[in-house]
Length: 174
Image (cartoon, rainbow, N blue to C red; front, side):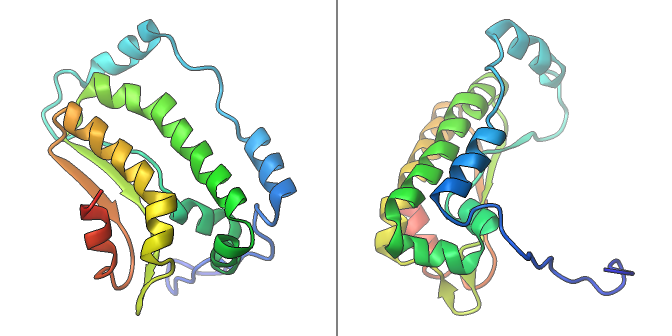
């Protein structure tokens, strides 16, 4: 968009990355992370943060918000009912990435903040119900909470847009 810095507009996709199981598998395979770093390489990369004088924040990804970003709100919402297996496969994949690649960094760096973003709330509330949140999202939040507690993280920050009144108690219960 011309002069988008003056009149900002949200991007509109003609076609999202994930449209069905086949497009998910292609996306997953093409964006697969590389080999996990050795503990020596992690140590070397992390040493520069040992003497930090300001808070460190590490992002741990998302659950339903990732699917909404990759598939669009409409398909993400209908996937809950039409193909919950695909929804689980996507969330499980991204949880595996977080636990395999990010959690070791949290363990080593001991950040003050661990951050995630959901964007599952809009002006009237959540786009998925409590049942779906518990089935799909809560396991990820529990694992994030466990690593944060184990590493004495001061704050777990969750960004979401819109009316979060339904969302807050669901996350607190994790």
